[in-house]
Image (cartoon, helix red, strand yellow):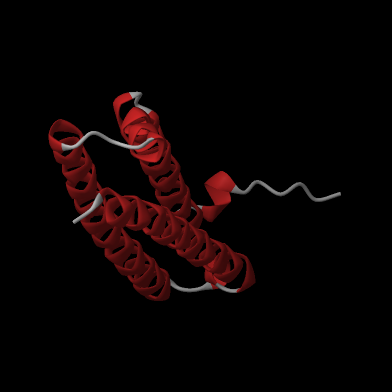
Length: 138
């Protein structure tokens, strides 16, 4: 695999990652709309089923992200190998600098934190709506 192939795959990885993030936000948005529209008044078993379905969808995305992360690490290792044998162009050096500088790790940490925050919020909004949504009546 040449450096150009690796760089192309890293760019494609970013596209896939952004697509996964957009799918995650679409799923969360649809779930929030469902909570607002009917789940707040639904019985316990319907709430449990809806939350289990939401959990399964998020679980599939987690598996997807973990697979993509493994692929990303493999591409970076290939770049390190190319750097040791042939040297890298500025594009390859920039890709390794992102990895070595911690940018990739920070993005990953933010993604996990936001995802966990949304998941916890969805749990409380599903099963404890009166505790989390205190509407004032005027």
